[in-house]
Image 1: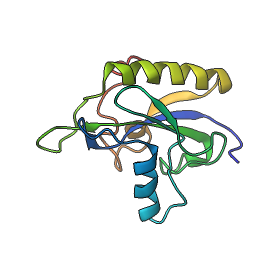
Image 2: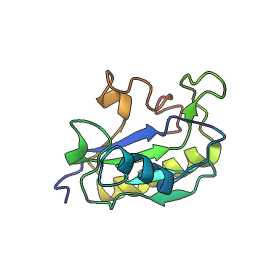
Image 3: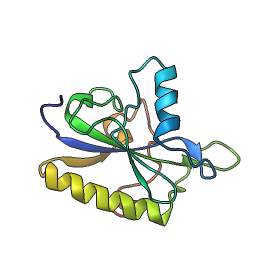
Length: 138
């Protein structure tokens, strides 16, 4: 169990906008890497559907050095259509769902700061997610 929650961390799946994957696919990816299962607590699909990943309140596996005190949210998308370069291609329904989920999590963890993966691990994930908090509607 996670003892404290100091951060709510936003990620992207590093997939193209036409790749509407969810928890099941990411869980398989993470297991293939030797992890216990999906490292994120939440996944927000392209249509704005929020899927539950790792149990809330448990330690995640989503940002090195912060897993013990954070909850992770993954937005599906983040890569350009043709060049695999970072792209802020998140949908309006995703941003709306993200804002609602952040509000819910902040009600549980009022002192938690909202951060992007790249804010906490700029060398490891400099473009995750490829949008500012303001661009994400937060």
